[in-house]
Amino acid sequence: MLTETKDSAGCHLLADAFAGAGHQVVHRWPEYGHYGTMVVSRVEAEPDPFPDRVGYLAARAAAAAVPTDLGPLRLIGLYVPSRDASAEKTERKTKWLAACHAALAGSEHLPTVLLGDLNILEPDHSPRYPFFAPFEYDFYRALLDEHCLVDAFRVLHPTDAAYSWVGRSGDGYRYDHAFCSAALRDRVEACDYLDEPRLTKLSDHSALTLTLTIPGAQPRPITVAGGADEPDTLF
Image (cartoon, rainbow, N blue to C red; front, top):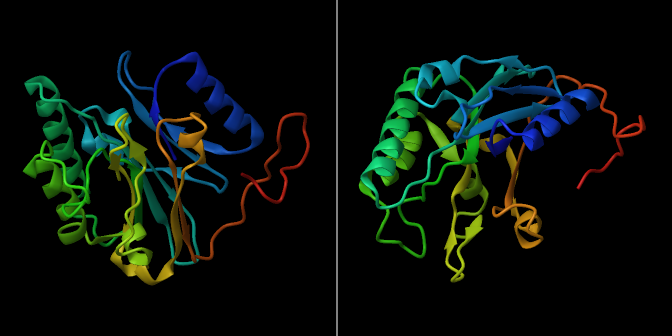
């Protein structure tokens, strides 16, 4: 799952490279000046209409269903708008979170993995930052209490102080999250932050990995540049 994508030469290059190597790429190009999310899958993935249900800034959501032995698993990637103290950006974030909340309603029975850069913190995040508003914490709570999801990282690391973005002054934020249906809780095998992309400045965020023990479809054959078969281990 890639977030903060845009209709740029670089993102077109990424999408074409993934597709050319054999991955299935599910996303939509955002309007000029806006950002989106991209699903890149090694197994057959059926586009899911979740972004259309969000409606507002729909490219910030990407969704696909992948086959598993338990039935289709819905993957939802989100890039939630960030904000500052301005009324315009606060309204944009409030409106988008409300649209996403409404789009999730009624689908609690679907096995789901929801992940991405949510630009929100858990209510008991340490340290606590006073500029986060109740509506941002309420969205996190709603994912758990109303949409029957669990924070996969907290399933395995209930007290760890982990951060996916660090400000210039060294203050840490766990902005990036992976949630899964409560019914999948016992199948969470691993969920970890990988700091290397942030520390090497490939990105300003750490990567987040999630492993679920769900038997599924065989991956598509993947090739790397030059036509060689994909190595057994990727970093």
